[in-house]
Image 1: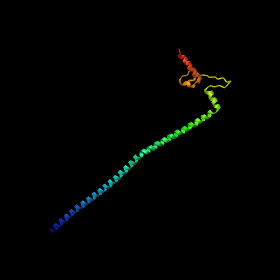
Image 2: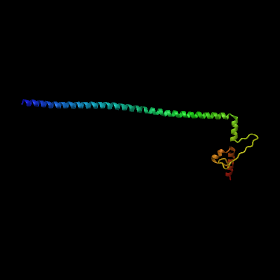
Image 3: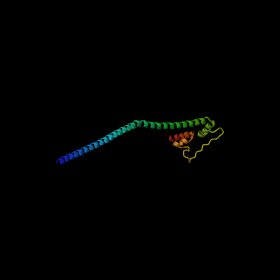
Image 4: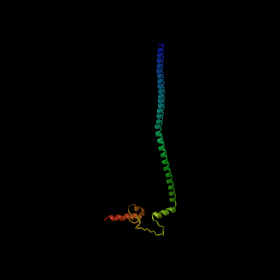
Length: 163
């Protein structure tokens, strides 16, 4: 019986040992899982903080960047307007220089006012087929006629209205 008691003790101690070994293994597995979860939690916390910082930077910089681009566009538009104004100034300077020339003034007066030089005979011809050049044009056609034709056209029209 001594053998049986010794065997029971061995078996009990083996069972106990296996149980302790299983508990230790379970404890190690639990600790490693806890460490992994802690590591994951730590990385997740860091990642969340990083995302928070990036979002804060994006929000903080969005308005200044939008303002920068809108001002850059406005500057470009103003430079374009300045260039157009400079071209217009050059055109006006050229026109002013032309108006200082007496020959140019004479040519303009002959074309637009139908002036003639002494000894010349002036003729005004109307083409009835051409639109706006007849003696009784109306609306925009009157702008194409000489001023004196417009005056006489107004007098004729006033005569027609009065009974």
